Length: 137
Image (cartoon, rainbow, N blue to C red; front, side):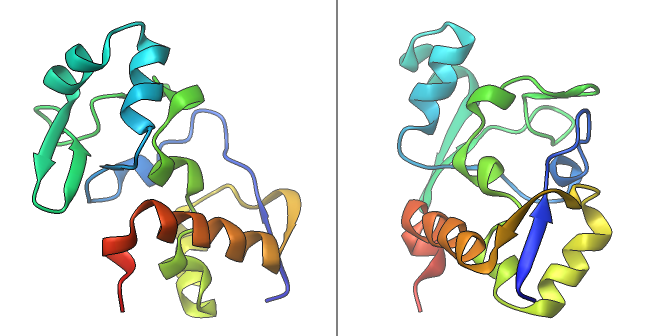
């Protein structure tokens, strides 16, 4: 695996439909609040839950991201770091098997600009910096 191609596909929400939670990195809530035109306190009280290991988006009643619409992400331009970096997460790019499993889930893989392996690894490192407790040895 020398390089990757990836481009998020318009209207695709397959990564958002996967089980899990959306973690918030420093700056995510502020950026999203600004995008939505609300103050940070309102954003936190409406959309954020705190757990021992950090801040997360409060799931909707259907247990999905509160910004997931049938047409896509309502905050796409200001989406959280976790979402912005997908599929370049360390657990996905560090092994060929993980990348191949993700290819089956994500229609954007194999499309778009060529991304050298160093670029993919750099993006994965950004994820580690954003969520260091999740990637401690």
